[in-house]
Amino acid sequence: MPIETEIKLALPARAAAQLLRHPLLAATPPRKQRLANTYYDTADLALLKARIAVRHRRHGWQHLLTVKGAAPSVGGLAQRNEWEAPSAPGEFDFTHVDVPELRRQLEAWRDSLRPAFSTDFTRQAWVIEPRPGARVEIAFDRGHIEADGRREAICELELELLAGEVADLFTLACTLQETLPLHPATASKAERGYRLFVGPNEAKARAAKARTIALDAGMSTSAGFAAVALSCLEHLQGNERGVRDSGEPEYVHQARVAIRRLRSALRVWRPLLPAERFAAFDARWRALAVALGEARNQDVFATETLPPLLAAFPDCAAAARLQKHAAARRKASRRAARAALAAPEYSRLLLEFTTATLALSGSDTPTLKDFARDCLTKSARRVARQAAAAQGADAAARHRLRIALKRLRYAVEFFAPLFAGSKVDRYLRSAADLQELLGHMNDLAVAAELIAQAPRAAQSQLARGWLAGRDELMRREIDAAIDAFVRQPPPWKKR
Image 1 (cartoon, rainbow, N blue to C red):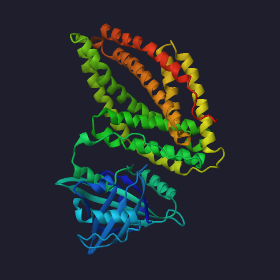
Image 2 (image 1 turned 180 degrees about the horizontal axis):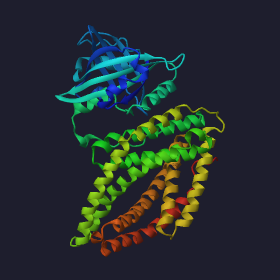
Image 3 (image 1 turned 180 degrees about the vertical axis):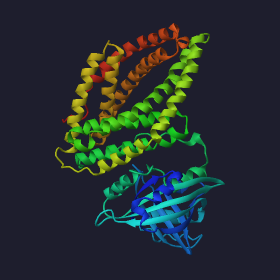
Image 4 (image 1 turned 90 degrees about the horizontal axis):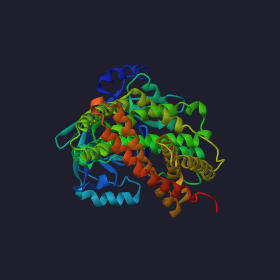
């Protein structure tokens, strides 16, 4: 079964000439070709639902029929099945697909296939040898995608591995990124084409959430970290477009959750990670989290905390002025979040972190399951200590408990496949419920800080009193929830 391994990198059109002057490329004339592609699907988008792409490619007088399987892209890297064979326009002979079940499904759809969208671009390609035994094709594509009269520009670089290791692709990508504004791209041309074909209906879009990570007890600890870390990057990059193009708060929220999960993974595996490569990453991820955190705080304040406050005091002039001030702060914080994801530092961080993660290797000692038990036990003890300190205490103590609980919950989610069972599910639900209560109380504390930072004319004793009252109402509920959570037996202990 043929596997295509490539890194896709977005390039601003303004940097095209700079790319062509790069020392790796300038000395060798590129191979140029115009590639016109038509992608097909059924009326009910059966191929899209099955995450399969079928296209006809016209290259000069030659026509090719290509079938591609979908694969998640992480740090720009995509590894997917690809089958390609000579064909003719309008013909769909799938005999070259060597997976019988897939071939039968494609043949069942054959009579229902119709054009969905097209891509038309000029490719300039170079084959280089970054080291002995390694060969990489660098393809620079410029053109457009078209669907139902709508167009979107193509300006991207594809680094395809012809021989060597995946690490060779990332080493080359990092070298190019030193002087070029390259960003690891997650969407293939087919995915972008489908977005155009379906139409710009933002209501159909959904923020990407963390997926279950396929850990198993036979993995090495380093392989376990790589699976978790790359899943977090996939989660983060799945929300980039939403943060950039949408005002929907959930995209910022999920991007921030992805970074928190990634930083939690770095803490869990810290004793086993090479310090010389990973020590600096946590601070860099934290800086990005801070940029997104301000936007999240403003979203929560404007959409969750402020509306009931305004409803409680509809005639309060200071509250109305606070609403106007909050709207301006929210707009500014969203601009800052978008800028953070558009910054060169973020693009470098994605590539460098992915490179370091894929380069990990380690022994099977300790086993992943033993390592998980040890980490979860230490984390649960930390939560118990913070829980004892938080009962009846101030907002700062509850905040420390909330952070410790988040880290424990994420670690349990990472390792849950190793301890499958209803007890793990119940433990996670209980942790999530307590975390939600603590989160609501933290939102009230953040709201009090935001009000204190507002202009004097927008501050109100009524608002402060309202927040303090809600905080007091939640204290007893939280103390009971804390007590119930810490009394649960850990579901990962040996029996």
